[in-house]
Image 1 (cartoon, rainbow, N blue to C red):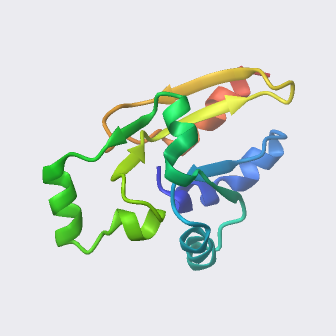
Image 2: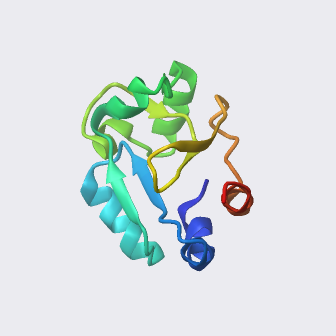
Length: 128
């Protein structure tokens, strides 16, 4: 899920009384740069070492061939995430009601498959 696509529909989240928050293993300074670059109006929280993703069973180790590909493109996960595990969270979404109850979860183990931002609005509408 690309963060700027979420920014495009941030007002629709607010209209539904929802708050959007992203969670990333990136160091806060990298997230802050992304927030500034894309003028994001939602919080990006840091999950150091993907610890929370691991607790949820959503952390995976980047395969060596993909790791080599990342490095060939100048993508240095250890530098970006502040630790050298070469792990990432599976992309997904969790919708939690104001009562703290999880209303919907969508996660795909294929890191190239990202939840469609507008589908999140449909889930919010269905959980009223």
